[in-house]
Image (tube, rainbow, N blue to C red; front, side):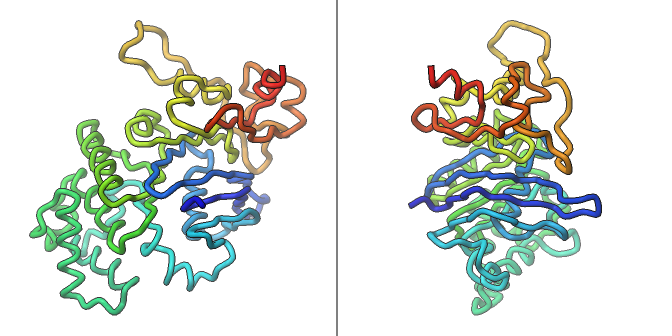
Length: 324
């Protein structure tokens, strides 16, 4: 049984103009110690999936269907109190996007880690929690004496590391990293990815890496899930997806990244814009931008089917070719 098994997840945001269908029928799983990358354009539903997993959706957001099995328990059905006491931070934690803004500037870094520990483990005394906070900072490469520093005394990379320390405060089995490379230069990004890899192997952590940067996922993850307009369009082993992408969107996404080894050429972009999820297109949501669109693409939503071992895709064209 997988550590995390998401089945047909549907999450909407209810507005005065109607429901925004942010996540529609998403299914994937994460094994213990596995790193999965969740990629796609801005607004495709990546962060909504993460917020759904922790049940911390903003006002108006609601899980309207599907199941989320975590440690063999459907956490969609449990109460918010149970989520707070049993799941959040203790078993599943979140590294929020943008370390610069994620920490409170008027509290010491150590106090913010201590708060996370004592909120979820109230029997732990402050002195013990501070000692744990120091060890957590050492785990991510920061001297334990820095627990008494304020966020402004940390560099951008150190803040990102401190956020990782906070996410690990209660020994979770799954960590979600949401756009962890935001506002970091490439050197600090490389250090951050190396640290995540080391922690994953050392602590047997499962990681969900949410980003639109495929190079970060290639460096860190074993599995890749590609989202477009709330749908999962391709999913599987990262080597297979990079070597032989099958969905037209995945192909365009990979081609839009320049290669340092290939000859110089004009940049390729995906024509058009992502659809309005208040009124998404019928059938395949990518068909208005797809160069291979057929009549069936406009009428029928494609199913996510396994084309090869550890490689699934939701595309009528691929499904038709597979039958031949």
